[in-house]
Image (cartoon, rainbow, N blue to C red):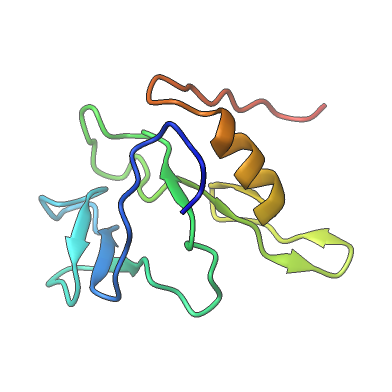
Length: 114
């Protein structure tokens, strides 16, 4: 388990995240298999071995405004890190450093590079 002030919840192969905008569980964790479209949290590529839910579109949840926006592990590709689908991703060693500094009141500010 990483050192962090954030609450830690281990995932299991039955964990998913609903990404179906018309479903009542949209942008919420669900148990798999799920009746609507849901992203699998237990991944063979290990990108979600460490995940922080960033709090995008969750208070209140609005259909079609985005779901499953996470801070997670990055995919290493030739020349650097691979893209995400709207998430924030870091190499394991960098993520562990950030998590060690984070507490329950932490806020992530995302800025575009010029």
